[in-house]
Image (cartoon, rainbow, N blue to C red):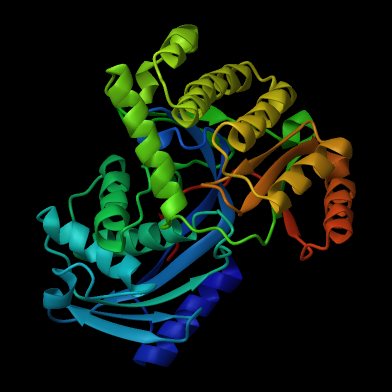
Length: 385
């Protein structure tokens, strides 16, 4: 954290010739379980990563925002006229402008600001680098402007920025995790009510570790496949006469599936309904302190994503299979799909051997070598200085 925060401050001084007023950080996330349930009004269970995006920032006069990005090396500048017309600010800057736009649309007097952005959240890995950027910028602007926007209302506003300004049809999970997670806990989120419960997730105490494997298979939310899955779920709910697939329980599933004529829609519905139940079952085990028993639920989630929701790719399936063969208690893809990362629940002393097994399996398949790290649940968005 110190390194990425120091880089943000150094970048701010270099670009703007003065120290920032403060530093605000927001994490990437992994979703322990509950994939593609969020936009179906269902349940998710993410936790925040120790990898973060940092915004060093200060106010500036007028309704203008000047932003430097370490990753691109660019400095962009935009004013209220550009912000108020979605599409005028493109690329990575759209995430920043989208936050300003969403705040203004909600009636907030957003301060003009200068920002320097640095991050150690990998791009394109399914670890929600976009939500980390949005949350870091949002937290900075709320503080700088003294805005009346409590934490429980911030995720929906950040999601609006991504949905309506950037054009990515994401649910509420990523922004909720980045803003509201707590150290040592997973965030049990009801995506309909937006109610949260912080569930103890003591991996170290259970003698376990969570291995995150970056498959290096490109991961993109704002593409046709993600939108197609969402459309299919909405069509299934409409056909079943329910507000959202969250309203179909596992006990009702067979009857519901019999009412759907399209085989693809049946598969999509089956994934969402069973995935919601897997989230509830995982939460029950964690509440009881039975951490190591969640492994089979993680694996079942992956099978459902692979076979029913059809969002995995060969690199992802290879990583899951190799991790399980090497002794992982459970493994699954995390994120929106078509690439990204794999989670593997492993014994604490087995993280490196399992990672080595995945790397060897990649080599056999001729895939680009994966990266990996071992993580513990971290806190959400916060002001650092």
